[in-house]
Image (cartoon, rainbow, N blue to C red; front, side):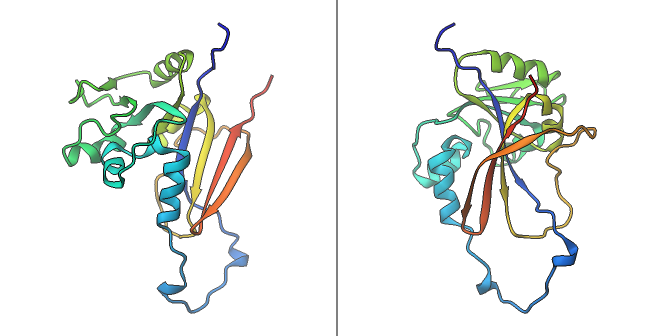
Amino acid sequence: MEGRRQRGTRQTRDAPVEIDRDAVKIRKSTRQDRPSRGQGLVDHMRAEYPEVLPGHVRAALGSDEPNRRFDTVVMGRATYEPALAIGITSPYPHLRQYVVSGTLGAGPDPAVTVVADDPVATVRELKAEDGLDIYLAGGGRLAGALLDEIDELVVKQYPVVAGAGVPLFSADFVPVDLRPVAAVDIDGVRVTTYERVRGD
């Protein structure tokens, strides 16, 4: 069909930075030496990715920007749970919402579709539809399950060492080629966009 755009799946994630241990330097510093990571990053997200901000955050910011990149969000149960814990059953009311969970049962909100099994088939169906792209908001397990469907990855790297955390992808070791297509430094945070390199 002419004019039809194939939808892609993008993931925006916070990621740790690998450190060359031979290059580590220790010096005295105070909190005042650390760069601020605040309003600049929020402004960037509002300008470039307004739809990734949950509805209650958009309301608090007075943000009513239209969806620029995404019209659908797919998230795991663990990503959905914090919203439920504070009484929010539709965290992204400005997007079509899918929650992947084998234990949630019927969704607590008619605006949220629960995917009990086979998230890959669901995402493939969504990608075949016309519209904007799909925002993958989830942990490493869901991202690992959907790895073959991810077309773009947006990684926010904070210059903070935090120890153990949620991996970007919990999946078998399968190298995936990515190429950086954009990068910006904001308030000490580097936001890099990668596109997947697919074979012919």
